[in-house]
Image (cartoon, rainbow, N blue to C red; front, side, top):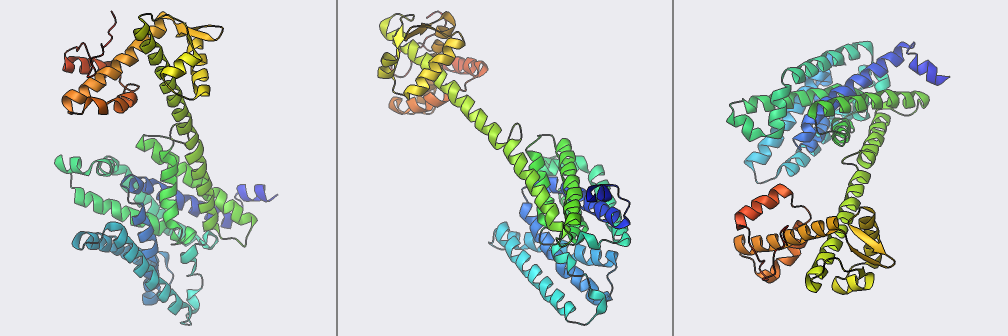
Length: 430
């Protein structure tokens, strides 16, 4: 059974691949949270593509594939790419996305040229160097793991000791400057750590897919929490999971590289998060929209009952669907569903095909009508809008005004008696 062979970790090669994959994915996920929150996702892509010429130049200069030497070259060109992006975007009329596109293309093009030259140069030691392009976790050797492990530990220690400062410049750079933090130095450190994270993962995933490992876990984790510490832990766990199972899938299909499988697994996790996350997922937001739409429909029906009661000087007269639709056009099925909900909630009483207010329903309908008229008056008095231009805005705002905000509006308007159309504003003693 290959499952037990793999997860028993008795094979040293499996241990190296799994450990390297977890190390790479966890480091990139942790650092990627800051990159994601600073809305600099494309920078990660630029850095990932820009480390290739550094790797090739290091090999050309030394003729050796020593991991530390390659990492130094990758770090230099990765850092240089960020410097050039900031230089171009600050000293020219080009925006940052254009600068990133230029730097990414130029550095990656140079990297491909150098890699091609190396492959045709006859150096027998160059074998396996192309794994940096698309990644090849299976080629990770013990010395690679030690090198990447050391870099990864330095990276995580840096994040741990400067977590508060990195968090502050990620959320509010101006406030960090105002309280005297060395923002430029902290940004340089964060940039360096980002480059280190990219450099750590290129052998496993490759320069082409490394940006995905930097951003995708952070983006997926953001859907599950608003707390940055928890977000980083969730992103790290997602990254580790993708590293393990990406390596396992690659183990089952040896002809398939590990890096793309790791990216495929984390992409599936991200899709699940975007769809099913309890607060920000697609289904959660859809449920919230449906709930809000039902609330608006129900409150509009109660307001309609109140307006008809004002007109007839009797708030407890029974109303038919036909009467309600004559006063306010709406979809008949929405009206029926709203009447059923309001009856179930105790705001209306139903007798055959007619409905009438309960005391609770009248109080709620009166409040919605009051909020509508108060907001119309507020718009005409403070924004100088014409009375015939305020109805639609009031129709929207009346459903989201809290009791606290209602009190503030009443104080501001000094408890007015009529709205801009000289209609009486209904208070509790109405």
